[in-house]
Image 1 (cartoon, rainbow over the protein chains, first blue to last red):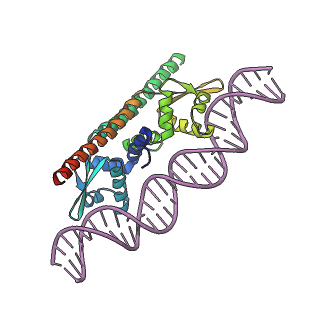
Image 2 (cartoon, rainbow over the protein chains, first blue to last red):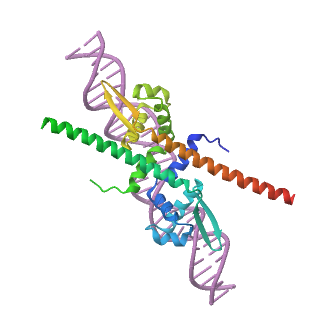
Length: 114
Length: 114
DNA sequence: AAGTCTCATCGCCATAAGACGATAAGTTCA
DNA sequence: TGAACTTATCGTCTTATGGCGATGAGACTT
């Protein structure tokens, strides 16, 4: 087995999360576990595409998979993944705030000159 | 300007972070701001490659850029990005722990049978 | 002004990733 | 057993990404 660095582990989780469809799958599953046939109608993607996305999230150990008869049920392995996403939002928000703050400074500067 | 959804903003930040070189650039810059010519010798990548990676981090508003004479200085915009990375580590660690726990259960189960 | 230094950008290539339809494999139902 | 259902996987196409060398564009130096 290939030696995995900390960076590689980080990249595996982060890249699993850096896709819009997969983020929406996580949101969808935040309400509770669902089988694929329940998930499918909620997304405008083919069955094979959704299956592949679910598998990527499973490979990154973000989703748990359980086979129940002819169905496969997926669930969030650890709800802390939502803390992570919230932290991304927080980072984005702070960036936007800093931009707004810079905007105000600029505005004041312009008013002085005006 | 195209309307950007919350998901798109998340994806932009997350995909900027999901590359090993870029994660290492962030670690490198965690010690303080550096110009490109200082960064280059620390990485086994061409100047154009590093420049592109720095730009991706800048586009995601993770790095600030300041032009200082003939040099360009990059710095972390918001150290909270490291909290985010630590949370990724935490998630990975919890996954590994859960795996180890499952391993122990399996082991006990095998011992019973043995 | 010419040369040097620093860094972004361009053009290209190879590989990865996302999308889909078709097919396969397993499960349940009649 | 055969049909219907559910989901994973395969093959293929298109686009995105990461890598590099070459080039371009400012900014100092002499």
